[in-house]
Amino acid sequence: MYKKTIVLSILLVIIVLSGCNSEDDNRIVRKDSDENITKINKQTHIEQAITNKAKEIIQSKSEVTGVRGVNTNKDLLLAIEVTQIEQFNEQNLEDEVAKSLEKNYPDLTIEVSSDKKIFIELNELELKIQEDKVNKKELEDQFNKIKKLMNEQA
Amino acid sequence: MSNKKKKNLTPTQQQYQDFANKREVKRPVFKNCIKAFLVGGTICAIGQGISTFYMYFFDFTEQTVGNPTVATLIFITMLLTGFGVYDRMAQFAGAGTAVPVTGFGNAVISAAIEHRTEGFVLGVGGNMFKLAGSVILFGVFSAFIIALVKTILIEWGGL
Image 1 (cartoon, rainbow over the protein chains, first blue to last red):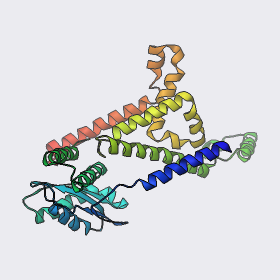
Image 2 (cartoon, rainbow over the protein chains, first blue to last red):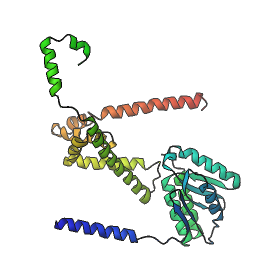
Image 3 (cartoon, rainbow over the protein chains, first blue to last red):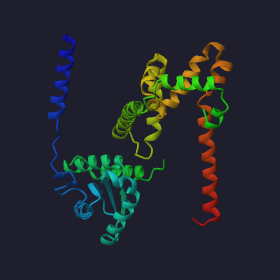
Image 4 (cartoon, each protein chain N blue to C red):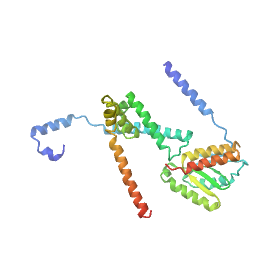
């Protein structure tokens, strides 16, 4: 009985603490069951307007449920999240998205990934850019690291 | 027993067959399936958790995260087999614990433990892959065949 109370109280504390520990997110966030999109609303070292526009274009596809992305002057990296059933077909979807964007931005190198890891990394980088915690050099480094991860073979 | 063989039985034997059939405990197939589904699913959920952990905290992508995940799962199985916990789980869940990669780990490690008394070379070394050897052989061999087919298709098939 005593033990049970202790375990329950510890659980309660963990739940309450983890529930209240939400990070500050100053990006423009739109989130629901079929939409998970963030936009950086700040002048940064590298203008992110291209990414914001591209996100809107991708989000209009019904299979895509979430987008994260960062761009430099030459490259645009995007990570997409797709619906459960489309996971079987996400490689094709990547190509499709990349092709449709290449029409809009012919002078950018566009890379699209449906990998969860890329999504996590781009999300973190977006947050950093929003909070202005990176200088241009660090941004390039992070960017190249993600690019390298994207092209990693199993 | 097949029907052909049954016809050759003497009447007494047939009588015995009927008697045995009636008393034989029915295999609870559906119940076993449910148990296997639940326990196997739990193991896979743990595996997914480990994958996600590696993706969040280390530089693994969805493509490459498989290797450390499998290694971790087999390591956990190794400990559980050594402590005798995995065997109890396997008794309850059957295929649920045998089909995921943990079942493979259990097959290797339990054989290694069993033959420890016969020495390290002839005992452990010789018998470790008694059960799992066929799995490894089959995997390597089929991978070899697939690689051959792929090479031929790419080199001469123009794919």
